[in-house]
Amino acid sequence: NACDVGFTDGLEYFEQDDDTKIVFLHIEGIPNGRRFLSVAERVARRKPVLALKTGKSEQAARAVQSHTGSLVGKDEVWEVALRQSGVIRVGDIDELGDLVRIFPRLPLMGGRKIGIVSNSGGVGIMSIDACHLFNLEVAELSSGTMEQMNVLSPAWLSVSNPADVWPSYMVSKQPLAKVLDGSIGAMLDDGAVDALLFVWSPWSEQNCIDLSQLLAKLAEAHPDKPLVCSLHGDHARVAQDILEVTGRITVFHNPYRAIRALGHLARYSTFRRGF
Image 1 (cartoon, rainbow, N blue to C red):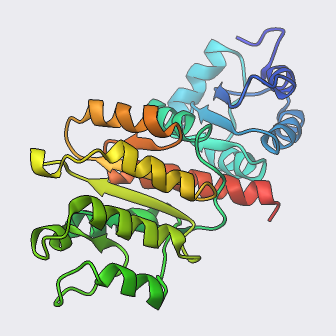
Image 2: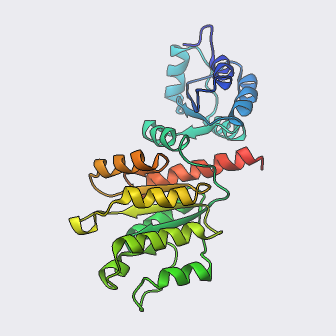
């Protein structure tokens, strides 16, 4: 309980450890906040520092004082201080797990603009709402990108972002691998897109193509842009295949968590760039 070794000591130690790629802190309270924040900002310039700050409520704060003897302080002050220091604050263990998975695998983002490809128009709208919630923008695609995607689509469908590519397969009868490769590839090629979310529901054997090989090729062709997936349903084997084959694509259970993780990545990328 930090009676002799505290958070700042731990940060300074792991700062020098090249085998440590991410530092996670479970914080109840910190005696010397000024020194901690100074060291945390320095370490965060080298590697991500994640923090689960508990003791938010008044009752929890009293429990912290009983537990460790630390003064907790107002949660709003902690929020601002951690953000200014580049520390990424998570709300729960699930969010922590998401970030621990993406940060070692994905490149930093060049901006906050997201491309979304899915086989569901409804999921695309849900993803737009999530982007606004986590301070991301839905990228405005170039006319050239939309032309490439519209070639694969029925004449009555004008594809944009988010792109619902299901009609291209079901109505236009385009090969599914061609639809996904062309749509995801065109978005990743677009200079307005900083990261891409691919949302898929493998409902039947007919549309259960080898996603791992297809996505691996696209990720390798665009090493500077994060590519994340959301697979609906129980598709643990498909998710594991994607990770093993690509080594750098993370799969989430729903678009909300994927976009939340990209929001953290975008904010940290801005911090690392220094503005």
